[in-house]
Image (cartoon, rainbow, N blue to C red):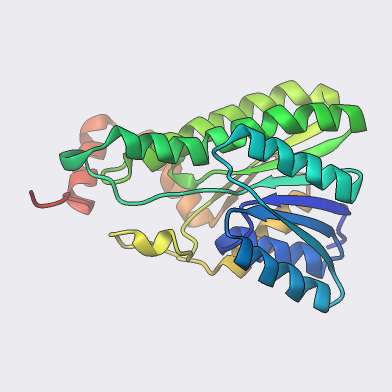
Length: 257
């Protein structure tokens, strides 16, 4: 499929889906600015892409700090002149049980997964208004539908992010700014390797990146996959609480104190 996005900014690009997306868009001729905290990884990715005929520039930042997000977007504007597509991919997650719940852990997850998107929106919206166009794709998760045991903070952060992006999509359409919510299922990354449960239809990040790019190119408002998991989450969302609670306890009984 033809690539309609010439200049692409990817936030959270040093590993997993973000890294795969950098290579995917480079392969299809996009000029890239990639950002994350892992400067060594960014440098390797950028050098690899440039060596193979692409154009990729990297910028080190911390998604949980608004000034860093602002600097990253301004850097991208300086290097690319315009931002046709911004992919907000930064994310963190780890097992978290109520038996030893820490509000600081919850705060950390929300700062990266939700406030990172909020900060990016605050900076990107004026930029794209000035351009007169632009697309923002925020990566959330199919885990945004309910509060699963052992991952309360992650589920909460993704639910909040999905709602935030949905509101932005509706409001910004008249500004010629397209907002896309990307809701992947299970993708094999360093983060998913920490999961303590079975992950059906686990997908490699390269395959996920190809699906994401193709569906963004098609202009979909929501990119979600794979479809068996999508349909399963739709059913789970509407289950009566007593069934959901029972199933949750059976699937993930929790830590032994």
